[in-house]
Length: 81
Image (cartoon, rainbow, N blue to C red):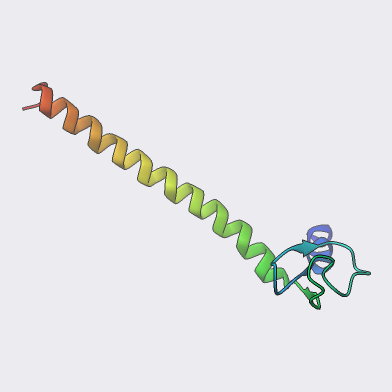
């Protein structure tokens, strides 16, 4: 956990373009010149967690919709009464 925490602590983000940088020597964004800010460990950990939850939630919704469509098709062709 120490290694991951160190990597997260060394990340910086541009408040204008939302680009992240790992280079500690950068003070300003190379793209737009805005002053870079440190990314908090909670923000970085939360974004990955939210991505995983979002993907899982999307999969579950897709599976439910597929089951409903399958049942509807079976009902329409008269297999299920």
